[in-house]
Image 1 (spheres, rainbow, N blue to C red):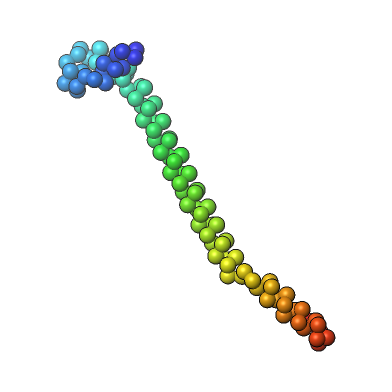
Image 2 (cartoon, rainbow, N blue to C red; image 1 turned 45 degrees about the vertical axis):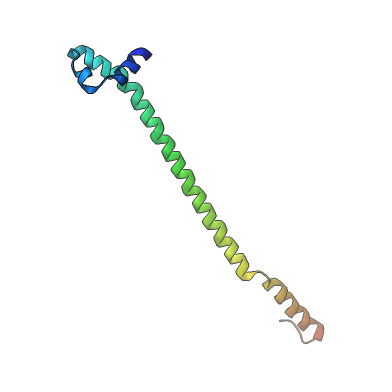
Length: 95
């Protein structure tokens, strides 16, 4: 089977058409069944790769947004704690 597969793959379309119809159809079947599997495998690999890239890009976007939000409020806790601490020390009451 492998020899026929390679043989049909190397023949030109003209050479394949010169075979009698029953033989030509058999050769097509021998060649196309494994070829369809190869093509489907390649398409599935491309799909997996594309989904992985999309997930990676989305994850980076989320991390970037979280980092940006953290930078916006970074240091606010210290400022609030210092302002609360200053009010409590003077005895004027809570914030």
